[in-house]
Image 1: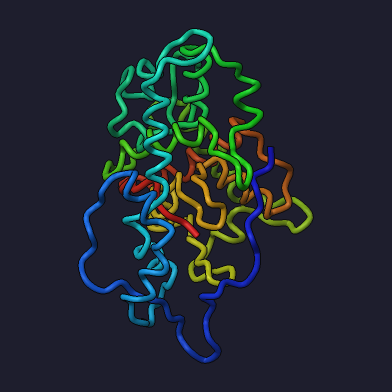
Image 2 (image 1 turned 120 degrees about the vertical axis):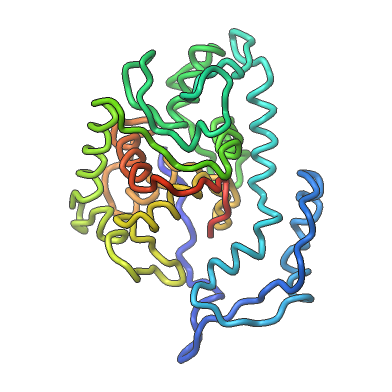
Length: 302
């Protein structure tokens, strides 16, 4: 399945001719988070309220200001709550909960697990990321069909989030503040990193693009959007540490495999198959480069 395309129209926050970009800036302290219900109730009023209380400022990175404005009302928290429910509820043909799922830290242990994925799992003899491991658990523990789960891992625009998307959001949220430490202790993990590095720099397709074409130098951008230099630790940490994320232009939580698939689509490469070796290897490469960074997912992205 191809990830839904995003709107390519010029943002209303685009740079004015001859001037720096300007954005409203929230004044005063932020209210404390008040739970999922409060988020749901306040979200429709977020922009109207900001118009009444904000002043205009110039910023070198207006997108970061925009994210900061909405951070306390991140709709991803709704997906996290739904994911927690699915994690704890017995489901599937085997009527079992996912609380026995081993994401690398032991059965049912979630704290810090997401920050150490992808990694090698002896029970499958392969390197797996969070998404492919969750599918494995849903199949082996709950009895769901692997082909059916892999066929529709991502929701389309306007559709409810898939079970996998909200589960990834929940699992990622349990690693907020954890240090990224994608392991390289066994040959399979080092091989995955090497393949991911080769894919990152491989030029192909009708535009002769590689991942490095857009993410291999400082200062590149597409319209308002700054493009992280993923060959540097700072850029890799910023990218890897914030996915999954609530994508405002999509109105949904999107996962790392969705993000990689959308990049591949924009390069006009063949579709990146969900759960494929290529998808996992690219995540491994980025995760190793991001080592030492901090997980802050699910975050908010344009």
